[in-house]
Length: 269
Length: 119
Image 1 (tube, rainbow over the protein chains, first blue to last red):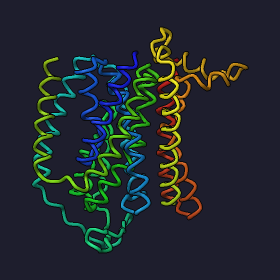
Image 2 (image 1 turned 90 degrees about the vertical axis):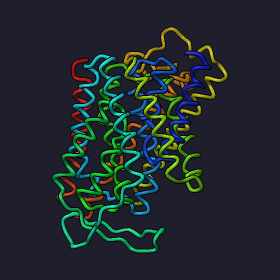
Image 3 (image 1 turned 90 degrees about the horizontal axis):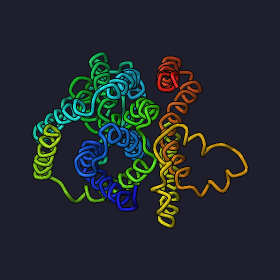
Image 4 (image 1 turned 135 degrees about the horizontal axis):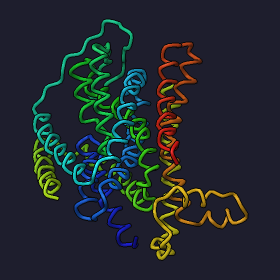
């Protein structure tokens, strides 16, 4: 490992962190293809690195979201039971699969996510209601200047999706928010803001559950991982500052293009 | 509980990035350390860094020790968050959520156990 590769990893991490923060997702979806395609890092190591980076972005975002009460700590904890179990299974599966198979699965994920991105820009938020149940949530939304109250419904559906999201997270090194957020909103009636915040809170614990497996398989390289974490943190701070100004459907379309390009590259490997 | 969790998460990230920045600075001063042949991710190398012998303090300037410390602080952060939740729910006498949090904690321990039991 030379200083140049260290700096290249740092650079890639910051771009991934920046894009992730702009889109409101973890950077793993950009980080892994960059590592595999441009730096020729083995995909298992790339995934292991990403899983640790995801903890950094999740913790940073969650510390703000929990303090403002956007994240629902109780709902998060309930869903974490299935998501961590899913992550453990995903982690072991990934370490048993060949690099080629894993690349193809990752390529398929990129296609899926890029299609989801286009849809997301047109999607309307699902309705929420407060009727007092086992898990309720309440926060002040500064955007609408209103106190928002909601009751979590259809918890079994949320638990199932969390299991699958955890599985994907452990398998591919992503946060899995891309599945958890829409599920919490559409199935469980959690407002978008709270769903995003709660998903972010959950991602840290999910990633830790599979990080140990990657560590035990000697996939977490100290230098690569450290450079990537620093980069991702830098990028996500910059991205959060930028995202207030940059907005719109155009960004979503450009990223869809980038993701589709990466997907094809991953398939051809 | 929310305030405490929020602070713990922020602290974890800050401490971790301080270790990593420290390691990065040392690596910048001695770039040759990065290409040392013994360096590959292995539990053995990791454990050798943490042997508390006389040379431990000189190793504090080893970028690898700092990198590992940074990574492990980051891994411990979400676990600490679950522990805070367990204690807070216990203090609030909220038994069901206390048990749910304990379950999450046990699943993480299970993952640790499954990862290392063979080695």
